[in-house]
Image 1 (cartoon, rainbow, N blue to C red):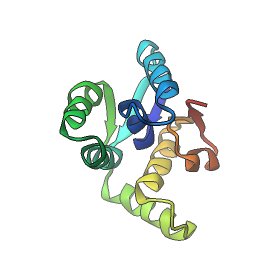
Image 2 (image 1 turned 90 degrees about the vertical axis):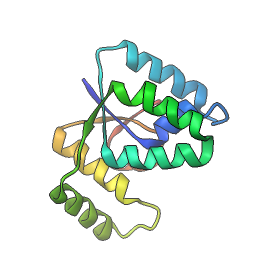
Image 3 (image 1 turned 135 degrees about the vertical axis):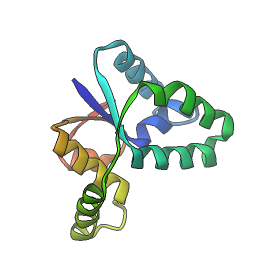
Length: 133
């Protein structure tokens, strides 16, 4: 089984002060010990690096780079995939929905993924199963 990993999931695992840290950490450890493949996009990585550096500092950024990124499968978005995500964003016309989220939804659908490791309610709104529940 392949699980998509979103920025909010990464942040919750890395930030001990996050309200969902304990549940996220437990779910993350379970995923790592399972046979699940953990997949994300280069857009999610870019967003996560920026937020981790800004909110948690360079030590957390290095931990993310050295310990988490190596266990991930990374889907590198093409111009065509970027254009699809942009069209989704503009057609939905919701201020709080990001281009990164739209790219994630499009990637998940294209790859047939149904489950995401995320705390972002937009994934559930889009019909995906979210971990932690």
